[in-house]
Length: 290
Image (cartoon, rainbow, N blue to C red; front, side, top):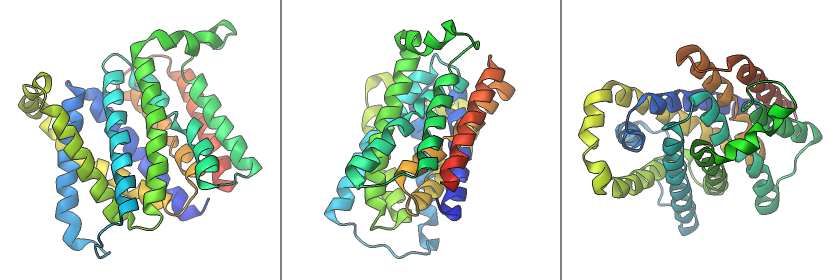
């Protein structure tokens, strides 16, 4: 993987983990995520006059990829918000990032990508680290925990988020291939905001919109530049690298998420989750040099 792409994706990973922490700290997750997109979309719009690239109308295929990506990522956020209602950040966040299990498969089958031996080993380390992060003790009996935990609604929602995200990643890679990552991201955010706004028109959410703003307006305003930085750096990095490598490398965010969960949110089993995160980091390093 080229070094510039690697650096951009690492920056994106850090920003991604931070805004997930903000979601965890909110009360009404779905409403808070909508406010985050309002903040990032507003910031994006304000930055358009300063864009280094000129706008061009996307072709039909690019618009299709934007629509597919937006639908997948809206579902990802809905499942993620549901998972955070009852799950720890340091367990839900790694599980919601399991897209790296599926993305190399889609990349090989749909995009014709090829993986080197170090790259394959790196992806396997990332998958093993994500499995290990769910353990509470290092015992043979504990190895069955991830499968027993499938009965947990938070775990199921997080795993569903990871699968749906993998489909969106393929749409993104196809979309930014022949179109500006800046304007692709802008149109993607707008499309997602429209879909989320339609969902928030339902009576079960409308009464929480202003309540969430009054309680967490500072977090919402902070989320705008964080989310925008996460989106842009990943899509520019994705434009320079294979999606089969880009998505697993972004899982460095799991290390950041675990550190935030154990050190700032006082979540349990920090030692095991930290070791698992370091395994993921080692996998990302192999991918970088593979």
